[in-house]
Picture 1 (cartoon, rainbow, N blue to C red):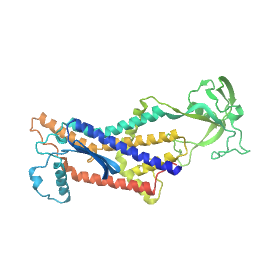
Picture 2: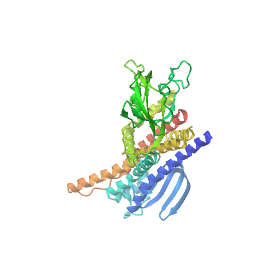
Picture 3: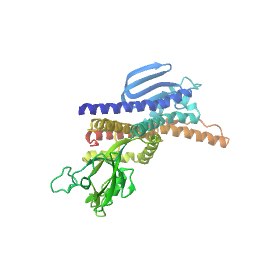
Picture 4: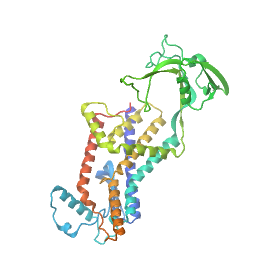
Length: 439
C-alpha cells in the first residue's frame, strides 16, 4: 500500500505541475488573442507531440515531457532587414544563431504589412501578455493556499487535553515509564483527557501556547489550574517538574553557546499533550501567505547558482543536503510521494500536497519574472526598453525609433538556456543520487 500511495503522490505532483504549466500558458494565450496577435501553437510540455488539435488558426496540444510549455506568437521580434534575409551569416557561431532566430521569426510573419504581430503592439499590451503567465501561477498559488488555510485549516493545539502522562521520564528520549521515574504532576493532580484548561493562576487561557508558557516558566513552583469537565469547573493545584531541555532558536534549531556547546535550560513540565484540530483561517490568509512566500523566494532567487553549486558539491562529497536548498521537479515529486505514503491522517497528507504545489507555483511566478531572455521577465524588459526609447524620442522630438530587435540578444539567451539546463541537470542528479527526504 505504501508503494501505491507513493506512486499516487508522484502522479498527483506531475499532474499538478502540468496544470500549473497549462494555466501559465493560458495566461499568455488569452490576452494575446484578445489583442489580436496570431497564435500558431499552444503546447504544454516539450519533445514529441502526444496529442494535438487545430481549432481555427491555432494548434493546441500536449507533448511528452511536462517540464514546460509555450505559445507561438507571430512576430515576437521585428522582421529582418531584406539584406539579412538573403545574406549569409558572418562572424561565427553566435552570428549564425542570430540569423537563424531571425529566420524563425520571419516564418511567423505573413508579409511586411502584417499587423497581427506581437512586436507592433503598444508596450503595455506586450507587458500584459508576458506578465499573464506568471500572474496565473500567482493566482493558482493564492487559490491553493486559500483552500489549505481557509478551507481545511491549520493544525492548532487547543486547550483541551488529549492525554496525560503517567510519569516524567528522566531521559527525554524515552517514551515509556520505568519504576524509577517520578509521577507526572498532571496525573498526580487528577487532570484527565478531555479536560479543557480555562485558567492558570487566575489568568484566563485561550491557547495552548499560553498553557505551555505558564508551565515552562514555573519549574518547582505551585500553580493553580482551572479546567472545564462535564460542564463543571474544577480547580487543581500542581507543581511542574523541573527538567533540563535544550534551548532552540527562533527558527526551531538547537541553540549553542559561545563555545559551540548546546544550550540547556531548566523548565517546568507537567506531562500533558493537547488535542490538535484544524482551525480555519480568515479568507485573506491565502493571499497573505502567498505574498510572504513571494518575498522569501525573491530574496533568495539571486543566490540560486550558488545554492545549486553547493547542492552539487554535497552530492559529490556525499554530505547531507541543505534542507532549505533548491529542488528539481524530480525532487519535488519524490517528496510528494513521501507525503502521500506517510503514516498520517488523509487530511494531513492532502494539506501537505496542497502546500507543496502552491509553493511550486510561487517559485514559477518569481523565477519567470527574472529579467533575462528567454524567461517572461526578459520579454517584459525588452518591451519596457522599447517604451523608454519611444518616450525619449517623443520628449526630444526625435524620429520614432525602430522597434527593439531582441534577436541581437540571442547569444545572451543561449548562455542563459545553457546555464538553466546545467542547473537543472545538477539538481535532477542530486535528487536521484542524494535525495532530500522529509523523514
